[in-house]
Image 1 (cartoon, rainbow, N blue to C red):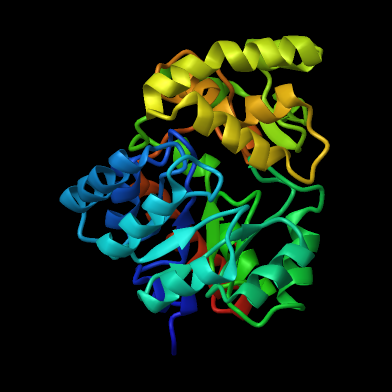
Image 2: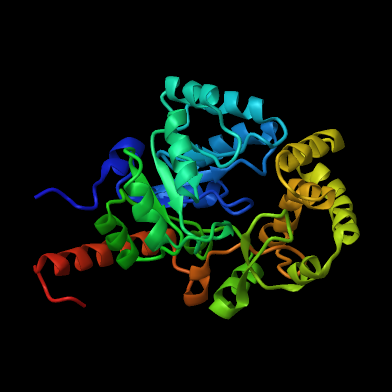
Length: 356
């Protein structure tokens, strides 16, 4: 009998289990990516918050910690994006993930280099568009997901996308355990992708003070806001988000400008590059200048939480699933538990043993 947990995702990405660790900015650093791969999953390195000069060394760091395959996430609006594309091709990473900004030419470059393109989408129309552009697989994030998210729940969006596209689909948004993996496979997905669950692990390099804000959060402490950049984002309520929620346009602009210099120091991006990124994000949308500039420099607000360990001064992107999680397992413990529980659930459904 074939192994139900060995899916097309495993074959194409080279991992033991169909479990993906998503590329959370300032969180999915080499240590977490390597720990995920060593545990049998597939990790994505977050390069959207790195300068081009930092991307190559970060890839090398992952490879010094693990021989497992892994991917890299970036977006075409970040400073130096074209150089990053070239670095990823030269370093021969296994896969790339992205959200806004890719075009058919860029995707063809990756595919010609043997690099799988695995974008994340939150709507059926975006899934169709990505397939038209030539991607290999699609991660579908339902409204329960963290950070930028849509309004359609995974239980509705996932079957919609599965009925629409013919490429392998990965389920994201609200997944954290073996029951979720079994459910995703039952829908017809090839695996699951998780962000918040991997953030809440011992192997995640995020400071303990920040992790504790996640373990203490209940579902009532989590909300979706459009105030940061005009698009819905799910976050844990904290002091910084409260100030942004109450701020008018002038205050948003001041907050953005006051954070720009710190982002310049962290990433090496020039003021011109940040303004250019803000203009690209604003193009075709209805964001104010303050919102678009805040979106361009938002990484510094996440950096305060995820690097500096000051969760009250930064932003805390999260999936709704954090409201039911209160532990910090290692990646080995997490993935082993997911695999064990998924196998038990699938066996019970086949009638091989009583349901737990």
